[in-house]
Length: 106
Image (tube, rainbow, N blue to C red):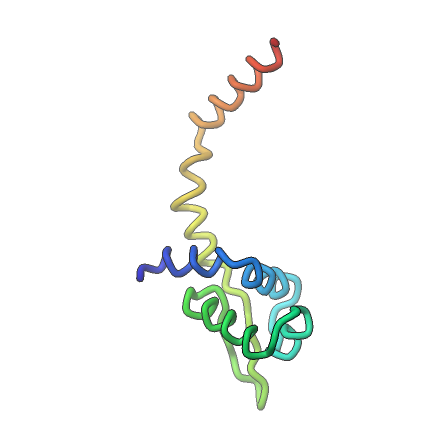
């Protein structure tokens, strides 16, 4: 499986996107902290974190006895640059402006 596929797979699940949002709000959370925010078992949250780690979106780091989870936004940026940004280039913006102008005339 390619890196883009892993990222898309990871982002496809709402629970995983919620975990990423939690880490965006405050990085370096433990499994216990993340579990307390979701209505699922510790095992379920751990499985979601594993998918996020495999996609490179979450990086775990040991701190003493705790395992902290950190957001890595780089894969999302690469997806943006490869799959989103090219569709928002100037010619697409021009077409949207034209569409809006034509709709305003009606």
